[in-house]
Length: 496
Ligand code: HEC
Ligand code: HEC
Ligand code: HEC
Ligand code: HEC
Ligand code: HEC
Ligand code: HEC
Image (cartoon, rainbow, N blue to C red):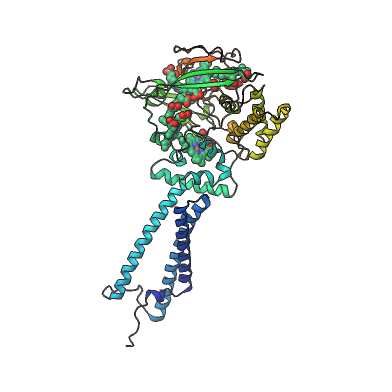
């Protein structure tokens, strides 16, 4: 009966403060997580902090609990071993029915726990990929990108579909840089505005092309504009263009157009400044015969020491850099509001005044103050008509333009976010197609207006009677354009 004990049961090993603390931690974390997960299934969390708590912090606590339990048991075992000279590892005898039962229970318990952590980590992964996590957690910092995204054609596409894309390596890279971003937000060490372009954005061909097939044939895409001039009558000025997007799938239509030249038939590389707004050097490689042509800017030559440095292969983002974070310039946003009659174009000078009010309020310290300033400024100008519903509606529509496009807290607006499609307000296509980029044999990158689009209608409402499919010469409402002047030298998106 008095046989010396050769083994200590697991429960004996658990009797130490480290393991007890571990049990308390794991059990507490487990029950808290269980209640909150049940709550998430029933009601859903509205705050992103809850997601972090339930799917990241509580599971970490549970794991720490388990580690403490194990550590305590090991220390206890070592202590008992030293006292009684036990073998260095606990022994297990599966012929003993009690031990067998416990062994099976332990395996089953471990299995359930593993399942739970797998589901938990999947939820954690899903959550860190969600728009709430990306867009709301760092609400001040990401607010400009989130608001513009919500108003864009990609509002239903997850942030991660463009910023991370499929596959493990970019996932890991993004989570590592994400950790740094969380740190930057917590320590307020981020820059305002967030600098663009995003340098380590994944190559667009691996993200955009998951949904958009570059060979797809678009033919010509029609773009219709209704501008309102900055005169007393806010004279409407219509423009309709067919932009020759084209494609490269002969079963859908003739091969050619912007996408075909840029993406399918040729490879284009370039060297630029940090902002990618000045491009002094361009290399075209014909993918069929491998012939190369280098074009250099006469106006803005590349310094000799920068040759062969940071050559970038042109992809979707070099044209479509604002597919979703679209910060509308005041003139553009007001044109749309007036077109849709949210601002009545019969109010004298409203285009010029509203645009001026927006620009002057952009420097306010907060968005709320900016919105108030818009009201004050327009209220003063139209003080004699302050009771008119037309004026009230125009002011509130202008305030809405401010809210959706100006983010004073992050110093972000159209000014810090150039859009490279087109050439009117930013150099865009004219970064290369400006006529001054020439090859050794003096050929320039094409810059005739018709190489990219056909103007099919233009003019005041009364003049716009017919549509011309052969194309019209551009009639510039601002008078003759001086030779060699880029559109963006005069047009800034705000009052001139
Ligand atoms: C349709 C693709 C797409 C989606 C969806 C998308 N982004 Fe972007 N985002 C881009 C591209 C492209 C750029 C790079 C612009 C550049 O480098 O000039 C960018 C840039 C950014 C920047 C840098 C600042 C800026 O305005 O360029 C931030 C911050 C950002 N995105 C956050 C988000 C967040 C948060 C979401 C989800 C709410 C999101 N993005 C969804 C394509 C996308
Ligand atoms: C997860 C799928 C998805 C990804 C990834 C994606 N898009 Fe889109 N894209 C869409 C959808 C959906 C639309 C809306 C189509 C519609 O309204 O007809 C759209 C619309 C567009 C349009 C037309 C916008 C307009 O004014 O109507 C452009 C241009 C575009 N995407 C470019 C891009 C670029 C560039 C990227 C990569 C940075 C990208 N997309 C990534 C799904 C995606
Ligand atoms: C050389 C510049 C350029 C490049 C590079 C480019 N695009 Fe485009 N794309 C345009 C222009 C210009 C349009 C015409 C519509 C517009 O003005 O937005 C257009 C139109 C589109 C449209 C149709 C929009 C609509 O309104 O129907 C989609 C989608 C699109 N591009 C996706 C892509 C994707 C994806 C890539 C990369 C594989 C890409 N583009 C590369 C210039 C470019
Ligand atoms: C990085 C420089 C660069 C930028 C930016 C750029 N392109 Fe190009 N593009 C070229 C080069 C180089 C060629 C080939 C040479 C040529 O055809 O003149 C070309 C060719 C073209 C062609 C074929 C022209 C023809 O007559 O055969 C079209 C169309 C075109 N680009 C449209 C655009 C549009 C639209 C944009 C802006 C959204 C744009 N490109 C922006 C460099 C650029
Ligand atoms: C390299 C291609 C390319 C060339 C060359 C080019 N354009 Fe454009 N143009 C575009 C694109 C792309 C857009 C914008 C489409 C959009 O808004 O989505 C545009 C837009 C425009 C618009 C409408 C702008 C607005 O906001 O009202 C006008 C007007 C225009 N172009 C006139 C011209 C004239 C005039 C020339 C010749 C001096 C010219 N373009 C040469 C590509 C080009
Ligand atoms: C020398 C300066 C200058 C240059 C260069 C210039 N514009 Fe203008 N543009 C003006 C002025 C001034 C107006 C009249 C503005 C008003 O009354 O609102 C105007 C009006 C317009 C309008 C109608 C109103 C509006 O604001 O949208 C369009 C469209 C336009 N220009 C397109 C272009 C295009 C495209 C180019 C380049 C091919 C260009 N402009 C080059 C000065 C210029």
